[in-house]
Image (cartoon, rainbow, N blue to C red; front, side, top):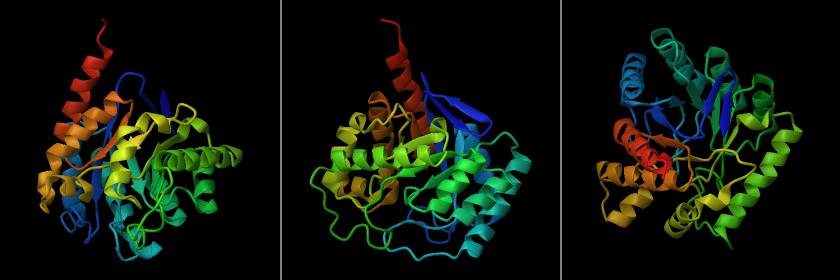
Length: 280
């Protein structure tokens, strides 16, 4: 299993990759305002790279439920200087841009990003065009509704089958539009238009979401469904359960893991892989 992100190719056959989250927004649910200054953001990137992150995912617009929309110009102003400075200080860094706007993705790729992570699942034909023309790696996420409406009574007849069907349809559309199939990965969108039961059902059956052997990315880090299970509103209480999910998901074949706390998730990933890959 390989994931092509322009001139970088991740060989995922034996080892997965940790994607470290960098929110350069003032209103992220988890760390809003901590890294909205370039110097703070770059320092955080250095920490995550040292802890084992193989990709840094930079986002300039919060996607928490009910979050306000940000203009294209403001989002570019937030992310492009960070991308440019990160690559100046850490030139080998593989950067992902977390955006649903084609113009922001295009500007980020021009600044040196190699991956487009779109929570709206490449519904915009312009975003598909950018992916096809740039050869960027892409993360296609499933979301029912929009960030403003997604948690208002999400319903499915069969959440696993419906998410898989979305991936299959989108895969055909992307390839037909000229996107290199080796650049594609899929994200079931845990917490995006799903109830607690939907999230747990997807996590239990994640192997069923395989489409054409493309890698899955899982983003569960610090999400509210963990707090519901624990009976805690404290975001920090969600860190170690995130590590548990990373290990369990890797055992089921998930290779890409988007997290806030890099070191413990990286260590759990490698420990799980040591067990999976041992010669019997």
